[in-house]
Length: 140
Image 1: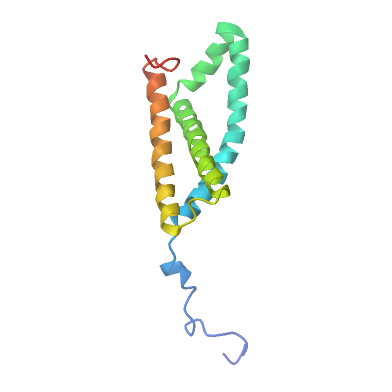
Image 2 (image 1 turned 90 degrees about the vertical axis):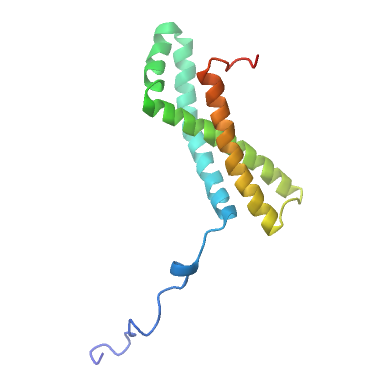
């Protein structure tokens, strides 16, 4: 201590208390997830463009897209894009309600955040189930 009198003792003060007691609110997670899904959808436009170009090139061109999209990694990426779209859409509706002044109560906002997460997963699973079973174009 005599060498550096300005240096505080390490044991004299605790570390930041938020390191041990802070809990992320669900509304903060939905805000961050909304931003991340927006970025993900922006990157997903490249995959959409690739799909459209491959379709316009006929069956041979589409086969190159299908060969990648039908792999397990391709299906995970497509599911992630589907979930991002559903989540961003549902959370956008919630933001519109907020713009109108509804849903600002703390408990209601947290409850709606959980509902948005659950509905987005269910919606993405429903889209994939309809597509996987061959009913993607019609519901009969």
